[in-house]
Image (cartoon, rainbow, N blue to C red; front, side):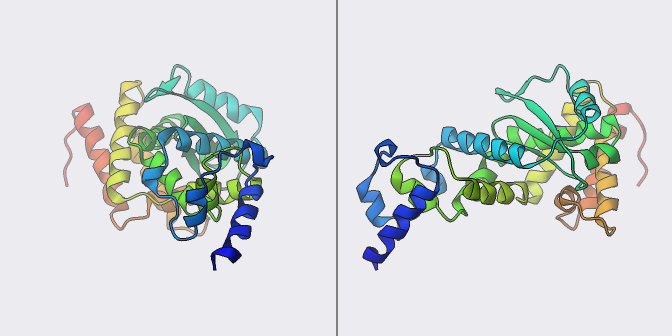
Length: 260
């Protein structure tokens, strides 16, 4: 069994973009047992996850058309003065896509689809980005990238080789897709909502931006239009309650009386 497995393992390592064997720091003990013992989340450092994020973003950027300049200009104006979060330098790009979606990576990269910008006003968009940054601050994004990596076909081979060098496009494509489509738990989403709200009000934005964005996404998810972000925001039965919670927070912040 192992004799048949090792050639496949070596081929997988080569497919992951290792240009020369001399550049690989082989761990033969790991290599021999990689078929039985895969890499685990505990074996991947935060630095390695950050590198996976950088490569994943670079791959997706290369594969996805950018939106018209007016979208990028609007986003940069909206986020001006927000240079970093949780010690990570932020960078922003807008993809040309009819899919209502946004994503923040563990390395500080934020990617927003043009369809989301068409749907949201500035305060709502700011709150959605704040929500996504909440996943970064709360380490949800790092955990999601680890899961995406651990679900890739070549994880054992890369782990056995002892390196996280430049991965092949096919592997990065699998990891990127798994990461973008990651589902967060109800508790993770709630904490990200809270961060998005606080992030918004601290920057002087409309405190109702968070609840309105949730209400729009909740309404959209009940329609026929495909929306990764709407599905993500409505992945739990109490999605309407999440929007109501954010509206109540906004009422409390502004001193309004809420009747239920």
